[in-house]
Image (cartoon, rainbow over all chains, first blue to last red; front, side):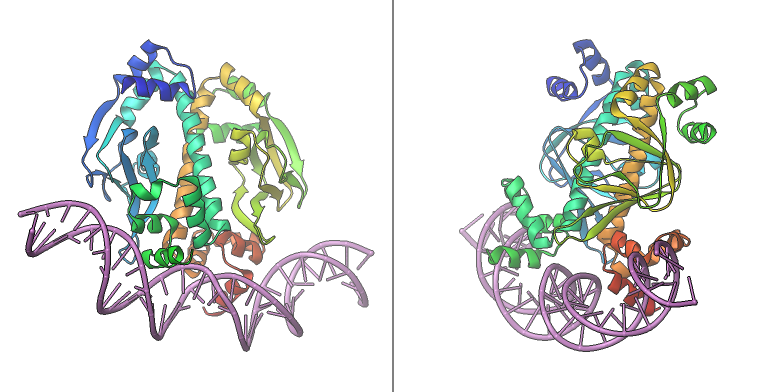
Length: 189
Length: 189
DNA sequence: TTTATTTCTTAAGATACCTTAATCTTTTTG
DNA sequence: CAAAAAGATTAAGGTATCTTAAGAAATAAA
């Protein structure tokens, strides 16, 4: 787990073993069973979670009471509710494990301490945030440019095995279409 | 202009006058006439732009040849094409001045130099990026939860004078509806 | 001030996608 | 293994939003 973190960190900034240890001491390993929640609506999101294994979904309940999936989070990915975390406001989002999931979590206060001890981390989190920003922008572009049908095709082309890991109705939710319509799309192919 | 920057920076991290001067030396003031481009499709986006005055739009041309506005940028806001900037790939976006616009621009290499001289900046840009992330997420939520009609109402409620600054067809584009449909919406109120 | 350009509106017909609701299939649980 | 729960499909009818096309209004240019 520490090795996995080290590999991950070194993608962005070079860290020595001691530096990783230092950071690691601020992290808390946690595990969540399938269907357990890392965060619920109304909670204050105090942590960033680094997923070492498993899969989560980040979703909200819309005005009609329907689940809308904003993102998925997988291994070697940081997840949090940025809005709740940054602004320290109650979360409107749920983060739920879709598989048994292991994370390394860090609270805002601990992360600040870690930044002080190891300023390089500040750099790393800037870079990570920029990358997340790019990812979210790409998703946006996909939604602005393409129809539901095309978005589905794009997903299948890019991550063919993802549909195996996640029920179809969640894929539909992520693509922002109804499960019935996704079913329709799949039929006509 | 330097004072404006200083005020802005101090929102996030405290900077002394000398520190601001140091950073300022890496920045290049530029002005753009209305309709001029800060960035065009195909260009490499080498800079981040801090808008000190004016208004820009960030848009792309979709498959049908239509303009789709992703964001607007206003005074005291950083703008760039993050994807092109980070990944050093040709831009798929245009950034265009909608009013005569003044910016302070900084290239990636200069920003890296500035980070080295003034590590506090690294922190500031992490925070800025996080805030941009929150902004973009909020926009996403708006689009996932609400109809075109509701998104228009939301915009009017939140920034009533914005519609005065920008032609309606651009508002429509930003809301991801056609100008004709926006016209329809406005009529029925 | 006239002309050209840009922006906005109207209306009719088309379509992508939704809603509901019933049934079928698969997976999970006791 | 049976029963329950969760997930997927089908079909009919509905609605939000788009497309096209034409003309009106406003703004900018000559």
